[in-house]
Image 1 (cartoon, rainbow, N blue to C red):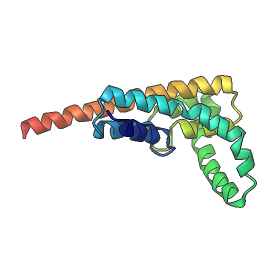
Image 2 (tube, rainbow, N blue to C red):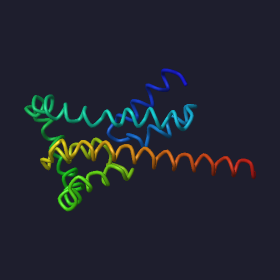
Image 3 (cartoon, one colour):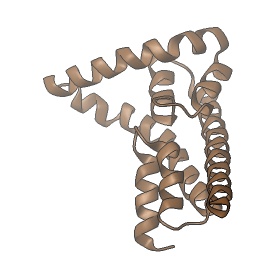
Image 4 (cartoon, rainbow, N blue to C red):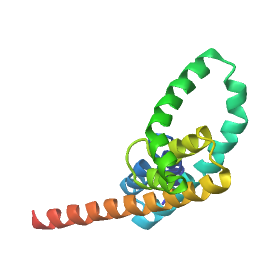
Length: 159
């Protein structure tokens, strides 16, 4: 496991689109043990929650003055609000947890944190739900990747 591999996995795990769903498979593809990829990916995806809150409470307010950012952010916000509002309104922090924990496209820590912020959830309710959701998503992705590796190994031995 090289520093460049760790940095690539960390970057993939921190980016809004790939998050854990990209970080763990990328780590394994670059030669990391599954547990190492899962650990690095989960750690950096957990870091998204405070980073997103810091961004939304500081830089966002400055950038929102620019028309290009406002247009981009408002478009993204509307999609995020639409995806998360029903589950959060119906189930609160539990709905937020489930939203983040199920590793589907656009259901990770970035979208969950933005959704909680948009809907005015208190941090003391949202942050634990977000962090637990990331951990569960990490476990799910690790299991799926591990099962994929086992299946691939089985078919290679058979063929």
